[in-house]
Image (spheres, rainbow, N blue to C red):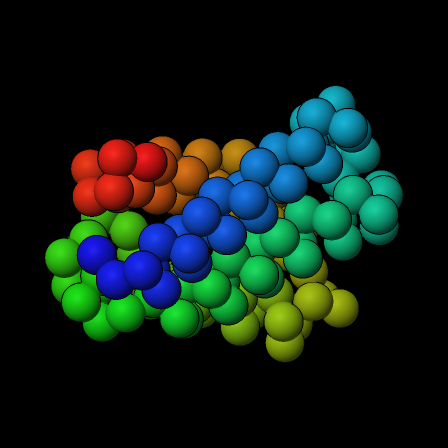
Length: 117
């Protein structure tokens, strides 16, 4: 694995962890997410950054690690960046609750399998 990919994957994990911290801080509550712009901003910035980092993953990594939907993560970034003022709260929450944990698990696995973590 390219050292650049290792750095990117570790940064993705950092943003996953920051997102989890934000959720913990607000009680992981959907209603609070909808009502609180600070909570939304904290989560959405992490998602946006994760998508941006996914764009930097090497083609080699994208081909070898098909379990991660790299293209979709790049697309999520574009949605959050360009349509943020019209944020679909439920879709964002689903990403936070379902997609982020799956991504985190896959990234941890990749790093463990390839680099010893």
